[in-house]
Length: 127
Image (cartoon, rainbow, N blue to C red):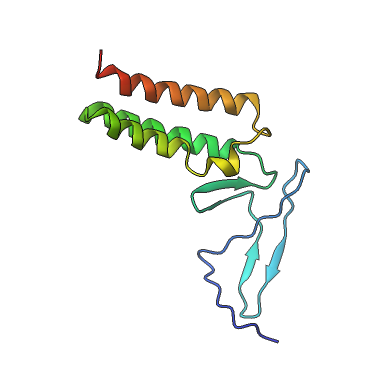
């Protein structure tokens, strides 16, 4: 029986969520001969998921992107509202999905440091 679904092997990822420390290795063979293997982490709509539904990878990626943007903004020195909207939109994109009580102290501390760094750059133009 075919369901008529076409899968792009380059864009399709398989992730199995578990509480175990080991990521389960699973392979699924589709009708058209494509073999999907499970991965430890994946990105969907700009949000990084790992197999344990921890947000470490997402926070690290937020930090990396925000630091790049902040350093770029430091160079161009534009208006406050532009800097604020760019930096904070990156930090809090889809936060209703990942910014929950399950976020650990380490991740919250990292988020706070990213936010404070962005604010220091934004406010430095008005001193």
